[in-house]
Structures are given as structure tokens and as C-alpha cells.
Amino acid sequence: MSTTEVTTTPVINLTDQAAGKVAELLAQEGDDQLALRVAVKAGGCSGMSYEIFFDTATEPEDHEVVFGTVKVRVDPASAPHLAGATLDYKDGLNDAGFHIENPNAQRSCGCGQSFS
Image (cartoon, rainbow, N blue to C red; front, side, top):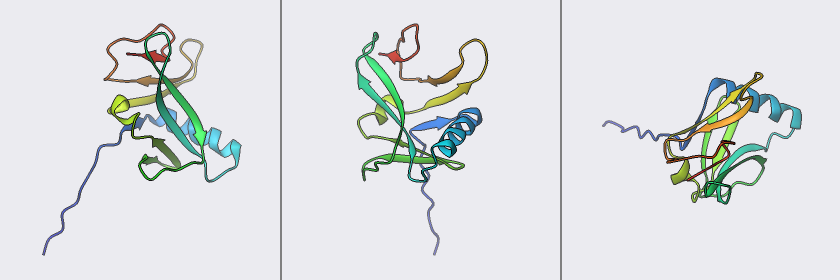
């Protein structure tokens, strides 16, 4: 008898730099129940905006993926907008901070926080 392994593609990916920075920030918070929540909400200058925050809530419908010690949760309404996206972190003088590279975005605003 053979078994079939099912693999699924994560809704969102984290670069090593982003996972490291999130792990560092989570360690500072000191709460093992916290996860990074990435969501998409209506609004922003291009129609949709990203929300990235720490959250302890877990819903049964959430998509969850783990990168090392970092748990990332995406709600089912945001998942189609984030499918294939990558969260990156850059530390430097230009473009410092978290950035989402989203293949679903047809256009984005200058701040990079909203898209359509």
C-alpha cells in the first residue's frame, strides 16, 4: 500500500531577511501565541491596502504557514489577493522596512502600501 503526500503552496512567502526580522520582533514581544497576520483591506490610494500586524487570534479558516519560528496567518478573504506574494525586509537608507511583492497587483501607489 502506498501513501500519497499532498503538498500545498503557501499563500504568502517570506524571504530569509523578513523571517529573521519578524522573529526578532516577536522575541521582543515575548508572547509565544503571537503570529504575523498579513491581510488585505479595501482602501488606500490604489483601492486595496496591506495590513501587517502581530495577532494571537486563530480562525479555523485561516491559512497558516511557518517559516522557522515565525507563524504567518492569512484570512480566507485576503488569500486570493496574496496568492504567490512575497514579504521581504530591507535594512538600509533607501526602501528600508517590509515590502510585499505581489504578482496579483496590477498597479500600486508610490508608497507601496496599496494596490489594485
